[in-house]
Structures are given as structure tokens and as C-alpha cells.
Length: 357
Image 1 (cartoon, rainbow, N blue to C red):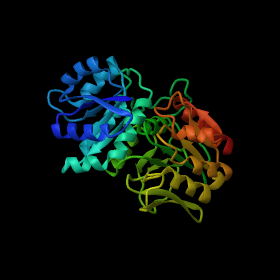
Image 2 (tube, rainbow, N blue to C red):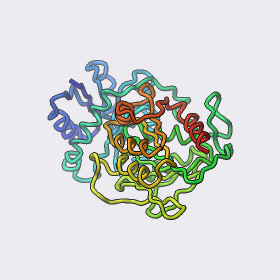
Image 3 (cartoon, rainbow, N blue to C red):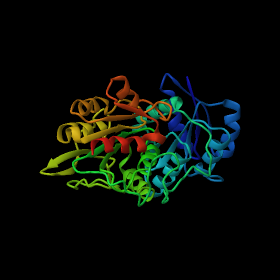
Image 4 (tube, rainbow, N blue to C red):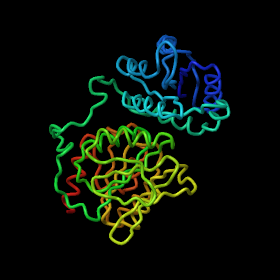
């Protein structure tokens, strides 16, 4: 059984979350707390496996409590956030501090809205129970890219172009649970002349644009939310909107982003499977596939098609993944040409690109 403690100042939200979670045969809600002070005592008493934590609470906000928790008593946390720009910014800060994932709660009709998220909530609590969580150093919880080469990492920050031949190369990155931080870590270590990158991260639509803006601040690349018909250029990264599939289309000598409002694939929109199939069919051997941390297996089969088309595939290793579901599926199916830790991913990608230049 996965023991869960719910922390939320709303009695209604506590009640709804308890009802949803206790319907699952493998989850037990061992308690609920109205604020971080009450939560602190209940964590000691009940020793939960997973915490669901509200962002906005009286007396102490969720992020302040999370920073203390991850420093003193690290444990898996799923944030419960509002679907607002402010909510997105605070949630991303929580992920920087070590939260495993987040679910969003509606601003109106909370009971009906949260009930609609039943499958997502259960999946994320189960993923959190399996996630690797460790104590954080608040001094390094948020690192902004400077102008120096990272020591020993071979990665380059702003202004440090490697003069790579970028023509016809497109890099595709898939990620889910733990992926917002993994994508940021990878892109922050890449030089400004890196070939164009397309990214499908499982994320709500209200969060994809703030996510792109947040990564853009810490990367030498120009990072933005993808728009339909946008040309894929070197030095740019394009993140799929949270409610659209992102495909890559060839138009003469150019590659374009195409947004698709089709049905979810593997229960996701954007789906890594959709993006990687388009890379296999339209970019072929000139593509590079990267699978980062995430729950499930979305995109694994499509990365197999990319590999069959001649594209090298890089998967994040189990040790550095928050959840080794998506990259693990790629590895277990024999589709990974390289299995690399996140801290070496940028360096390894640049080596792969150099051999293809």
C-alpha cells in the first residue's frame, strides 16, 4: 500500500482528494493536514510514502514548506497547483526544489474538476511512490547559466558556439515525470549553434508557455512554445503546447513545426509517440532522439522507428531519472544506442553531433 498524506487548507479539496485516492486498492490516505505546521507533526506520526501538497496556504506557503522538507526530510511530493500563470511559476519552483510532479486543480467547481483528474492523480501518486528523491542543497537548487564552460562537463553556456554543422539535423526530446527539470538541465548546457530541437513534455496547456519562458532564461538557445508552421532553426528549441501534438514536417529544404489537435495518443497530448513518428518518417537518419525521465512508455515504439531509419537514440539512465519509465522502455526494447546520465547528456549529445557533422 502507498501511504499518502494530504496537505491542503481547503476542507473540500481534502475531502475530494481523499475520496479519489481511497478508491484505488493500492493507496491508503493515512491523514490530512490543513497547513504545513500540522503536516510536519503528521509526517512524524504517520510516516507517509507520498505527500500531496497545496501551493497556496495560510501561515506558510507550500513552496517554503517544501524547501524545508526536502532539506531535512526528503520524500516524494506531488504538488496541487492552480491553472494560472502565477500557479505555473510557483509550481516550477517547487519542481526545482525536488517535487516529483504536480496536478492542477480548477478555479471553480473544485469537486467536479478534481474528479475529472482521477486517473492522472492516481498515476502521479503511484509514480511518486517509486521516484528517487534526495536531500537538496538550496544553494544549487536553481542554477542560472553563466558564460563559462561547466567544469568537467564539456558543456558550453552562452556565447560558446562549437561551430557544428547543423544543416538538416533535428533533435527530438521526449519527457514526462521529472522532465521539466531534466529538459532545463539539458538545454542549459547546450551551445547556441546546436541544431534545432523539438520537445514533447507531458504538461497542461496553461503551463507549457511559462515552462518555455523559464527554460529560455537559463539557456543559450532560444526556447519557445511551438507555433504551427514555424520553421525549425539551429539554436532554437520548440516546446509542444500542452494541448497539441507537435509533428515535424519537411517543406523542401526546411523543417517546420506542425501542431495537431487530434486525439490523445498513449493517453497524452502532446504525445512523444506522435512527434517521434514524424521525425522517423520526415527527418530519418538526420534526426537524433532523446528520451528523458518519465512515467509510462509514450514514444518508445516511435523511437524504435527512428532508430530503424538511421537516427541515433539516447536514453537517460535509471540512476539519474526521477522515474525510469519512458527511457527504461526504450532501453528494454533495444532501441537505445546510448544510455547516459543526465549530467553527461549534453556532452554526449554534442559528441554524437560531431561524429555526424
